[in-house]
Image 1 (cartoon, one colour):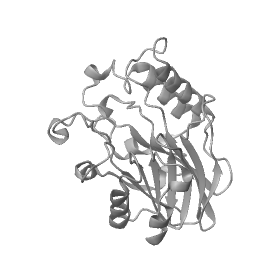
Image 2: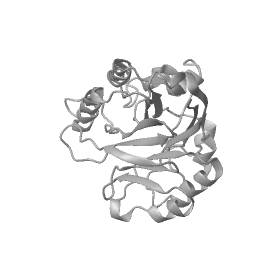
Image 3: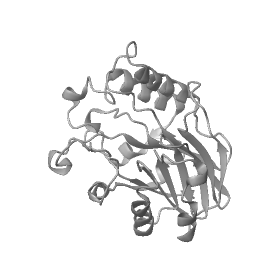
Image 4: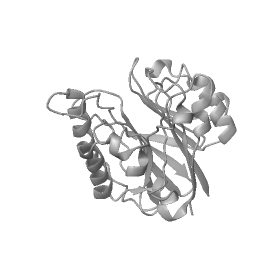
Length: 268
C-alpha cells in the first residue's frame, strides 16, 4: 500500500494557504504535516482542506506563534500533544493514520529555534532548545504489532556536515553548533529512529530544506541548511521508495523560508 507523507514549515498557514493548496493539488500527499502555523485552532482553515479531499485535520495551534497541524486523506485520530520544558507552546502533535490493517504513529514537531547566541548561560532561548531536545528522548517508536512510527518536522538543527553550506563557518552558528548536533543525533540513535532522508541521499552530499529570507539571491548563494527532517522506525526503513525536497517551492510567490519534504513508502 503506497503512503506519501510530506512535512513543511509553512510560516503562517493562513498567509500561505494558496501555496499549501497548490502543493496538495500538485503532489497529492496522503498526509501533510505543517509547522509554524501561527494560528489558533478555531481560525485554522479546515474547510479549505476538506474541500479538496483532506477530510481529516488535527490541529495544535496558538495565536501568532508556533503551532503544528496534520492533514490527511486517510482516516486519522489524535494520540496526544505533549508539553515540553513546562512551557505551554504548541510544538508537538501525535496522530495515528490508518492503512487497512496497519497503522502509522506520526509525530509532528516544531523544535525551538534557539535565538542567536549559542550559549545557554546567557541565552534562555538556547537553553530551552537544548532542554527540549533532551526531553524528546521520551518520544520512541511504537512497539505495538502492525504499527510503524514516523517522526517529522522542523527540528531546527542541521546535524551533519553536509546539512549546511559551510560546516567550518557554521560551527558557532545556532542550528549547527556541536552541542545541538550531537544532542539531536544522540536522541535519534537512542530512540532507534532512522534518518530516512540520509538513507536516500548519501550523508556526504549537500542537502538543504531552508534558505534565509536575508539572502538577496537565495538560489545563487545557496547558503542553505537541512532543518527539516523525516525519521522512521526501523521496520519502515526498508520500504522507503523515494524522498524529495521540493526546492522550487522556495521560489513561489510569498514563500516560506522552508520547503516541503516528500517521502514515499510502500507499506506491506
